[in-house]
Length: 192
Image (cartoon, rainbow, N blue to C red; front, top):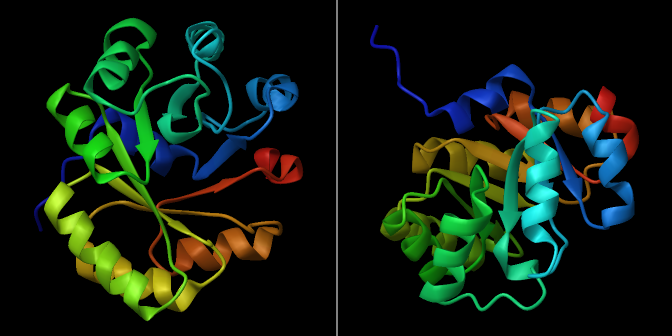
């Protein structure tokens, strides 16, 4: 059987599948001191994102910036180039096709995030993933194991789930359905 190659960014999800999703910078210290090896930054501004990433890296955390949520960042080529060359995170997260394409061109690890609100969104999301070829996919909400299993079987990319994950059972259900990791803003799960 052939062993599939994964990048260092993907491998970290296998080592610890809990990702600390930081929606407010006041929770960053808890994320930095948690057992989570990866942090999804869902907050920040152009004025402080480089400092936040530096602090995360000093604590030996993999850090992924949700570029759609960085205040003051234009999600155009120039803004993503700034993130790639100056901020230097381990990767980016975005719902925007153009951001994923630009980030890949600039050599960034990309996580395409999309919301499964109905069957049309699932179908459209799968097509988008095939076209954009992100390194990983984050599916929200993360509490729909049947859909996670369906998508994981079709896209052949590492799947991360997130959104509404509040209990250890939610994490286990996602992992058993084919997710490689689960992002959560629930502080109690960061050390689970």
